[in-house]
Length: 468
Image: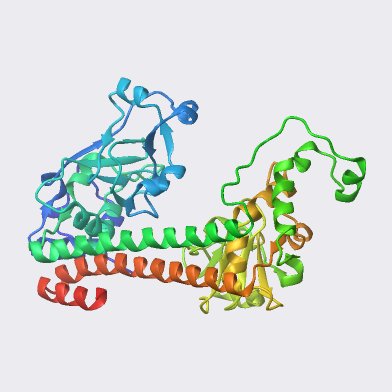
């Protein structure tokens, strides 16, 4: 049991008087920041947020101005042009007309406000973005390096303060006034700039990782003559009745020529091709039901947590339930592949995974042939080659469901060993760069904490050792 003893004189009866606000962890952070000569955030910037603007969702398809939401910030401490295809966008004229839609420029900071609040991100190389109602902005930042400020806000000392200041409404949210109250420790310029540079290096490694992975994808497509291929939807085409009998499908979408172009390119490759079922064995995973979800324990990996480069954690199950289901524990060397909801996301477990149970929407693939290496196969599964075959297979479904028998029939091109090795080298380099990027982000946050808990010289020395 945790408890805090707080003098009555320290309680503002017109503000927060709930026990959660006075948890020991929050009081300890407040005490350490006060002793580190910290300054309220509002003294470094102007805090702003959008409000009272008309619905804009119907304008997204016509938009050209990034409209920043929580999902654009949470996994991205640094928001860049690389996210362009992920942004929803509104017309610039609409944003100009409605002055309650606030704007930020490069070097300014976004903080998620509702839904999943308290995550800070900096606008890196975008000249102009608009803020949705789900986020707030820090404009006109002065007297502090904004990249250091993001590292601070993402560290224990920044994030915990923001989390403490959430309004306890039905949907927890941050307000501009309460965000302005949080304390910021501004260290000496040497460590401040070193932490800021580490965050920038984090972004540089992430950029190079993405570029290297894209090069591997392009090499695959180039080998198949599909580097510049674009899907084209045709309104009219002719198919034989025998084709419908063979495929057991008679919907027109299944027979779109764009899908045949992909299949023909794969089957025409000189090295040949194989159905995925010939290359791997498949194991179905398991559903546990939302009633088994916990706030901590063993990660339960759903499709929404699965990515080509990482697995995130959101839901957990008890250790007792894990022990009953541990036959579903993934192993090193397997590939996790989504088949429901967002089918075709593949993640290769190149290192021994931690305890986890994948959901029923995920398959475990174990290589049973040395015809292809695992990095190459994972790249194929994450490529447009697979995406187009999936679209053809699941077309017409309200909830996308890629059946295991369809998964087994997926056409996989067999590049020669030298090309596979070249792709594998690129994929591994991309993985190493992404791992380095995550390490640098954690280093930046931890250096902030060491500077507050110990001293700035120790923080700078530690940071130098970790990032060399």
